[in-house]
Length: 107
Image 1 (tube, one colour):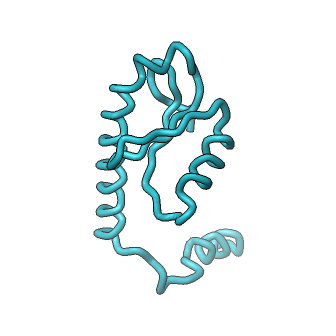
Image 2 (cartoon, rainbow, N blue to C red):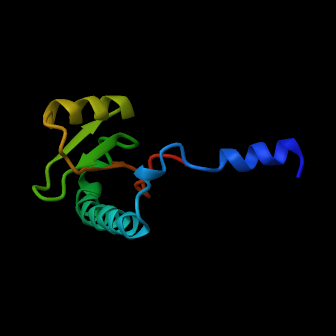
């Protein structure tokens, strides 16, 4: 083994192994996010036809329990509105873009 490959091997370890999240917890969190996204998507699909003409390519943040939504032209603007509206920090929203697909960009 060369010195470079031994360094790479050392870098693969976790800095704080005691903070490793178990796979079951990661799967639970992913399922929760998927469920939230599907609930928000349902509301988005219902709102899109009436909003897309006036607010094309604007961002919309949807809260699935109440059906409330916020709209802004810019992504940072919608983030600021969410922070103002839900100042307690414990909020579950999904952000979409008011276009044909609802996507905000490429990841």
